[in-house]
Length: 492
Ligand SMILES: [Zn+2]
Image: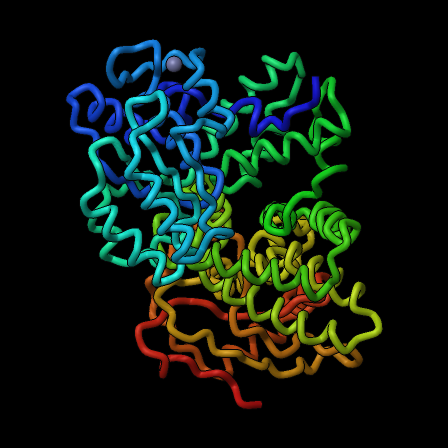
């Protein structure tokens, strides 16, 4: 027997088998049971969510020959049911409006509709992609749709309801088919694979379900593609081979490693992205988009509508968003954007990108001076002394304050004790700090007025100089303040 693609072989055949559209199936069943079946339905929704399947099930339910009247449980075995399932029934006419757009096609339909069905209770017209009809064709259809003969039912389906005239919409009962959630798709795939006696890891099903973006047909097409490569045991490695992870998944992997301070992992994920054929600047785009999404979710809350995220991904992304604070995301976006601009004109774009990723992954090392001090050898008298002096002043640097409206870049003066190396460089506007670290340190409530002399003293302190040089880092004051004028950066 010739191979049938999964989407055809496993098309749902009864109302109870319909995946992800339970409310619509129930409403239609109730309509059949109570004898209130409308003469015209308009099914809307993106591709592969079950519009045609439900249209055929409804046609079978209305026309099943095993029953004396329309039934909610068509037999799927009588001549009528079988023919409808194949789309070949004499009384259930399927029309693709995309290739029958003209007024003449609809006139033919109208003339035929006048005749009684050959063997069934109803003559049913399923018009797919109905928005493709011409204006004249819509007008011709309108008359029939308004007052069809008693034996005629219309089921119109469209992926683009905005293009269906309001006059048509108002004469139909409209059902909006929603995108099928990831869990339902994954469960359905599991059922199919069990029926086909194929083993599959959970990760595989999740990946396919996610890539399908709410479309069962897309999910089954992807599964077909994977099965043509490996048909015994599906592992995530097999799937990686056939369908490389999408950009945002790799961007998420890079971001997770950065959040964990794992520079090696971040570089590895970045390399995977490039191996998959992405260019450096394209991948920067994806990283920027990802950072933007996380930033918005961090600022506006996980449920914000400002980002277009599939509902099943929100929780994962919200977790990622909580790994950093908002200023860090601002810093990331601006840094990545600068990187993207630079790599376009650089002969060493890969090196630039690698350096930027390492820098992001190690950002906590640049800022968390307090922690560094804790690890410094406490037996060293100088160090212990300096620690006492410096720690309180720099404590706040581990604590990016959400109230701060503007983090003033401050250039610290070169300490007189240092000859060759500058102690500090010009500081970034927003210093990244993983938020978990920040949350453990209370925001200081002390007044924050500091004089140029105090800054100078802190910056030229030998221990501070040593530490900043050791980590090739910068000093940055991020204490909260009520009034921006409170900052007194030294001008020297
Ligand atoms: Zn039947």
